Amino acid sequence: MGSVSLKIGDGTARFKRASVCSSALNLLMLFSVVTTNLFALYAFTSSPKNHHAHLLPHTHKNISLISEQVSLILREIDSSQKKLAQMEKELLGYESIDLSSSKISSELRTFLQHHLLPLGKDSKTGITEMVASVGHSCVKSLDLLSQYMNYKVNAPCPDDWSLGQKLILSGCEPLPRRRCFAKTIPKVGLHSFPDSLWKNHSEKIYSWSGLGCKNLACLNSKKLNRDCAGCFDIISGYETQKYVKARGKNDFLIDHVLAMGNGEIRIGFDIGGGSGTFAARMADRNVTLVTATLNVDAPFNEFIAARGLFPLYLSLDHRFPFHDNVFDLVHVGNVLDVSGRPEKLEFLVFDIDRVLRAGGLFWLDNFLCSNEDKKTVLTRLIERFGYKKLKWVVGEKLNGSGKSEVYLSAVLQKPVRV
Ligand SMILES: *[C@@H]1O[C@H](CO)[C@@H](O)[C@H](O)[C@H]1NC(C)=O
Ligand SMILES: *[C@@H]1O[C@H](CO)[C@@H](O)[C@H](O)[C@H]1NC(C)=O
Ligand SMILES: *[C@@H]1O[C@H](CO)[C@@H](O)[C@H](O)[C@H]1NC(C)=O
Ligand SMILES: CC(=O)N[C@H]1CO[C@H](CO)[C@@H](O)[C@@H]1O
Image (tube, rainbow, N blue to C red; front, top):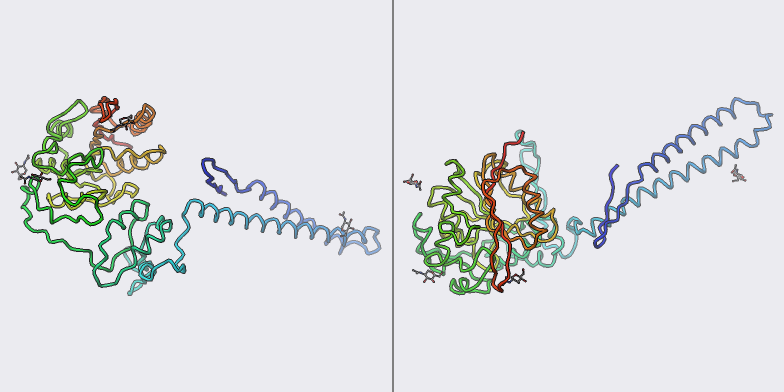
């Protein structure tokens, strides 16, 4: 038997399932059944004149009373366990979606209905029905979700992609919207590949709805995140030097890192890759990259696609949609900055390890260690994986307000594990 754990604020109250207790109760019940039967046997076989005869029915009665009590207690325990499980579900917000709720739009209900395969069980896969899935955390944002799912089937979707992104960021992934036509934007004047990697396109081909900035000049004037300050200027900005010219010892050059892969780096995955410049540099070297990014404050996905690169619209809470051991290289900037709980970082690093092949490279690029603790946690975590440290540089940089910050850059090689 397992245990039920209940999260209350910071503390965790544990309710161990009373396994010892319930086996004792089982024994007691067994004992009472056996003694009841023994007494009954005795009563039948002994002479009615026996002076114990008066006592026996009483004792018998008392024993059945006890066994009744015992089963009552067992039922109580069972129902409390159910109640605890329910409380836990509610506290964690992992209650499954109640489709009868009035908050659920009919389109969501239709989407989630199971559809039986018309020809019965599929012999290859063994499945008998098609089941749609929606992130379990969607239930925490039911109002947003019903707003998002309130559209006309077969008609243009509302122009509200940022609402969908808000849902994704709160763990509602995958999104259940399917049966409307997303807004199209004419992509005029696309450059052919590989010219597209380093050329400006018209700003009109990007979607600006739901964003604070309405043009590239505005985006370039902002520090959108740690890896993107002016990162949409791929003609004259710092983007044109990134990965080919070092600003400090924490910046590794792409050709040096590729050389560490013995010419066997062919496909890679860039996590949180800004405007796609890492993938573009790799494309210049005939290496195919997938760049994972959301569209937080900027049209990152459309920009990357316009460069002729592969954008993957995915939050980091999602398990990567790749099979084990497929990538020769994984490049990660500051998205690893999953604040708070160390387990959060573990879930991510384990998944990175999973998709990287043995002998493949994990490039940790200018990872900000906001304090010594964080560096220790990360270092210990990496050491647990047994990677070979091909490069390991801890450096300091002055930030905008003149404070010194510690950065870690590393190139690590995944070992063969048996
Ligand atoms: C390319 O676009 C940027 C904005 O991202 C702009 O500042 C720059 O002038 C453009 N360059 C050319 C050559 O059109
Ligand atoms: C990339 O591939 C093309 C076509 O195969 C080839 O001409 C070019 O030299 C390659 N570039 C590099 C940097 O290997
Ligand atoms: C610089 O670092 C300090 C200390 O880590 C921090 O409080 C401050 O917000 C940072 N400033 C900028 C502009 O990032
Ligand atoms: C031994 C014992 O507990 N006997 C009790 C059995 O039940 C009767 C009536 O319910 C009591 O009078 C006895 O004392």
